[in-house]
Image (cartoon, rainbow, N blue to C red; front, side):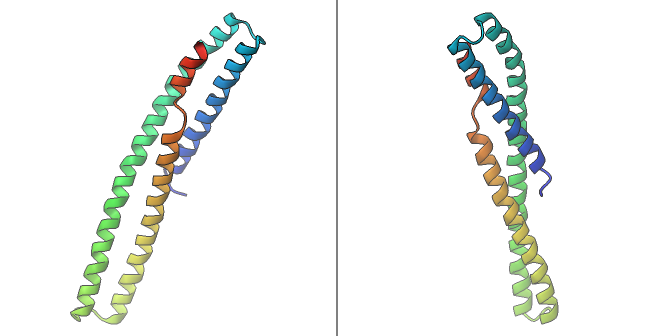
Length: 142
């Protein structure tokens, strides 16, 4: 598990919960199961939470995008190191044993970096597709 995954999962869970709450509030209001006054009271409470959740979502998204750029740079460096290792081995600057050890370590690092990169891309896509609670909250008020 990557260090950013728990923040991501918490943000997604919270957004989904409040999305359901807002939809339920709208349904209850439209069906007449709660009065307009009660709905407005609950709406005001939800609005405060929604603003905090949207800010949190944006913060997590920015952190993920920053980490994505860092991992891309990491991948670029590892690929250059792998190429350099190939060149050094071809030029017989290093032994085959040393070449193999370095290549194995770098390939493992590259694989892990690519895995994290793909996980980050997926997380960013998911977070970006999540509903904008603020617009839903405003629609519920109408």
